[in-house]
Length: 297
Image 1 (tube, rainbow, N blue to C red):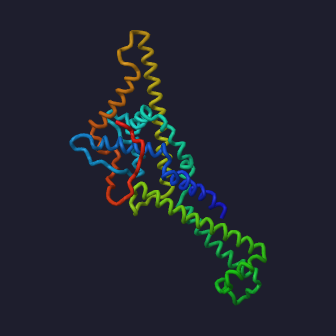
Image 2 (image 1 turned 45 degrees about the horizontal axis):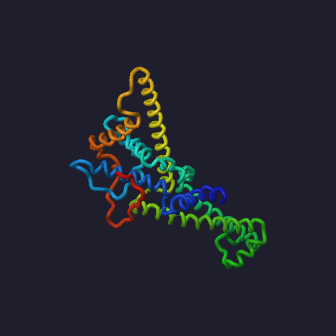
């Protein structure tokens, strides 16, 4: 059972310590999600044809943020999110430090792991039968592995007599502990899905959640690097112009402010009905996302 235990514990600990403790999500990541929801609502409710405000958004919407673009086909929702956070709440830029095990847990295949546990249970049960009859010394040609009628306490005593029997007892205990952990993890995962307002019939599995979180964090960092590189290039251009003629009245900081403002107008002028297209109103009978520290207007 060892091969199955190690990856399972990674997944179990991820759900337990990184997601469910401290009000399901850790502070910085929770606030980033709140800003995503806040910006999405601002964009989707803008204009005469604006949509109703949403209470939540589906998890996989996080992967769409770098796909929804303004009319310039360059600035994405995720770029704008990074700009807003960098300008107003820079302490959130390293939110991925809150979810370090997501990058490990995303590689674990839940369904495959459960199938492996079930296979181990079946194989171990066959080994137990063989060890039981071998240890008892009562099996003859007329007996089969399915005819044992000994009590549990007698079975344990019989298995303790031989090396294979002792191995079987130890393996049964260890595998039983893993099966118990599977049930606990499933309960925690169901709680997590309810927190995010996912439908009861969702097909999402644990590794999907962590893959989404990890991908979002990586995409966020890429956008941050792109913005920093753009600012450095812009600053270099400004310095080059300053050697030729005096700078215009606008400073680099005001240029950055205009970029943020322009990005907002571009999203709104383009309609952006597709931004967070999976965002939906979940005000009826579900546990709403509760975020603190939303971006101030």
